[in-house]
Image 1 (cartoon, rainbow, N blue to C red):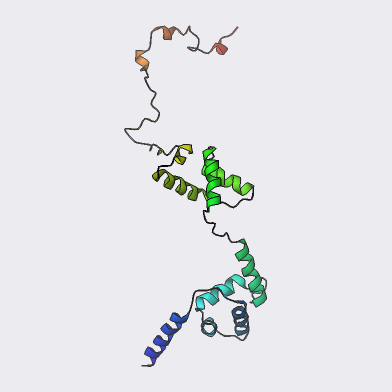
Image 2 (image 1 turned 90 degrees about the vertical axis):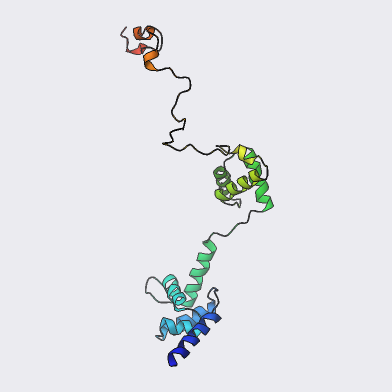
Length: 196
């Protein structure tokens, strides 16, 4: 009966926990409870978070020099990490118009992204631009014609029916004219080997 009560209270605790970032107040409480020697589970219960969240927080944001967790340092480290973290950029109409213009000027999606980054202009990834081009093609657009391959698939190597490396209208070496054997015409021998 005691085990059932513990399990039900544990699941009740899990259902009330929300997936959210730790606040400065929670970080302060972690630091205080950690200083007093509380376990990760006890700290997690106190601030209504899982012990894995506490463990990750201590690993990420403790002072690496002396392995002490301080709330103010943890908050600074978190803010710095969030500031550097790349943000999702939506493919807005403004970005779409710019990308379309550069694609029509025969820039590749990779060149578009590179140009935008170099000039500190917000842009989506090259993969997202390719997705835009293919959706444009499905709607009857012609942006795909400005790509390097113009929408063609690359030929696979080893394909028996492929035409890679085959010279069109070639003549077999056994069927060449006999005059070629004399090597008197230009191109049949290298003139720079001839001593003067």
